[in-house]
Length: 397
Image 1 (cartoon, helix red, strand yellow):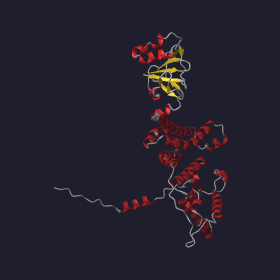
Image 2 (cartoon, one colour):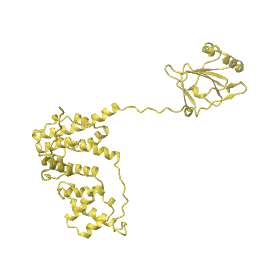
Image 3 (cartoon, rainbow, N blue to C red):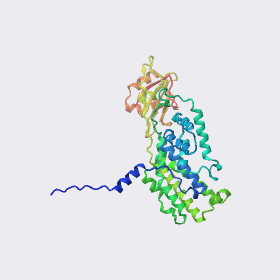
Image 4 (cartoon, rainbow, N blue to C red):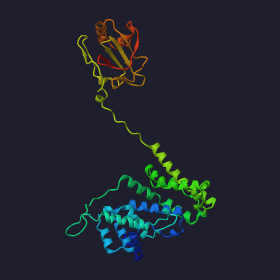
């Protein structure tokens, strides 16, 4: 009997939850800022600014600035003047500050930004945008700003930072749990290296994550040493045991990042060296192509590359020489010189009767050539690798 498919009923509660997730504002909240320490406040501000910078552009955040102006007593004319400026005049920083203030960030805090007002800074930035944008071109019919639309693609660095920022969610949750209940916090329960590996963090991500937490780590270490009175006072609310725990946790973050970067170096595949064309290798080699008097013609210099022996004859000095490659190596060319040869075995001798001796050389086989130089009664002179315009390339083997 065929099985009848049953339809799962979607409840009203599930529909509401789904819609809530779809419209949920994920931007940073400022709930509980009153109980934050100076470092916690500063870190939350920095992460909030990173969030807006990675998620939005200045154009996206311009409506937030307009909302802030409406909530802070700006006139309709002032709001319109700002609204009519070109969208690219509103920076991400201006938009992010306005967004944070709308989400509950206090405009003034004694231990943040030297007690200066964030609202005053934002008001000054808005005034500057209005002043610089008052002559922006407008559409004569609609009175709208003439905007050349362009799709701005995030750079590779921005994408990396965005991905790295997402990888720190569990770390931030752990730090939040420490701030709420430092006594029960245990840094040993967090396997940060495994956590980052599970997030598929690469060396580039690890470098960004490390930068995010290095400053706080260094502050904790310095505070633990007790040399700085300001830091000592800032962390006076923590016991020595809790200071040790949170410092250890930050150290584990940095160690995990260092480990990922070190692994990347070990596992990095060496770049393959592109083979250089033979024609380019021998391009600067100077040699004598032919000698009509001795009836000698040079071999193709390209044949030297990868060979074991090279016979040469200098028509000016009457020296016959043989380059022998080092064991397990081959002869090569670099500029105007021969490379890869054995300095002890590569020698030359002066010929007394070049025409007769070279004629014998050309007629000699492999066996005779083995002792050809030895049979010449002359002093051995070591070759120096250089080839010049008087040198005939006799033979390659």
